[in-house]
Image (cartoon, rainbow, N blue to C red; front, side, top):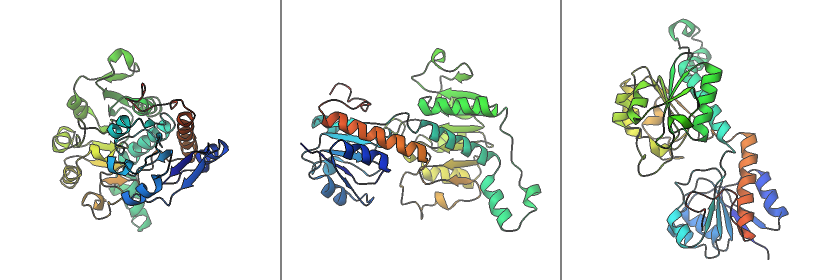
Length: 322
C-alpha cells in the first residue's frame, strides 16, 4: 500500500527523500497557510509534515484518512491536539534537533543587544563614524542572565552564557528543582524574582493558556530599566502593545525578538516599527542548514513509524499511550 504524505510548507530535501525512499507519495505545497488551501491539500492524505500553518479542528475535518501529524520542530500551539486525540491521529515532534541553533541565536541576541549592534551598523553605513564614541555598549561578563524555562534550549543557553561569556545565571522553571539544575544555575522559586534580577531576560517557555501574554506591562515594569528582553520561543508569550510601550518609554533598555504573535503579518504593527532599541529576526532561530536537515529527517521518520503501524519516535506530550 502506498501512503500519501503532504507537506504544505516545504522542507529541505532530506525529509522528502526519506519518505520517497520508503515508498510514500509525497506532495509538496507552495508554502501557503490559508485554511482553505490546507484543507484541499490534506483531503486524501495519510500523513502531514507540519510547519507553522494553523491546523484547527475545521482544517483537520477534511482529512478523513489522516493517521499522523509530524511537527517540523516542537511547538504545538498551531495544532488542535484535542481533535487529534479524539480521532486517533498520532502527533510527533522533533525535539533536540534545533535546540543548539536556537540557543546560539539567543546568545547572538544577547551580544547584539549589549553592543547595540544594529544601531552601530546603521550609523556606520550612514557615514556617522563618530558613533564609535557616542554609541557605547556594555560588556556581558559578570552580568546576570535570567532564563525563564530550563528545558533543552534553556540549559544550552545557560551553558553557553556561563562557560563562554562568564555570565551569572539565574532561572525559573517550576519543573526543575535546584538539584536537577547545572551547578552554576541558581534556581529561583518566583517567576518575577528571576525577571527582576536579570540584566538580560530570555524566555524559553511553552505557549499555553498559563503563559500566553506573560511578558506584559507588569513583567516589563519588574525588569531593570537597564535590562534587555529576549524571545526566541513563541510570539504569543509577549503582549506586544505592552512591549512597544516599554521600549518607547524606555521602561527597559531594549528587546530582541525572533517571534511575533501575528507573524508573518507584522509589517504594520506598532512594535515592529521601533528601531532604536529593538532587534528582530523572522522566526528563523532554529533554521540553520544543519538543523533543517536534522529536523526534516526526524519529522519524516515519525511519519513512517506511524504509517508502518507503530508510534512516532518522539510522540507529542499526551500522545505517548495512544
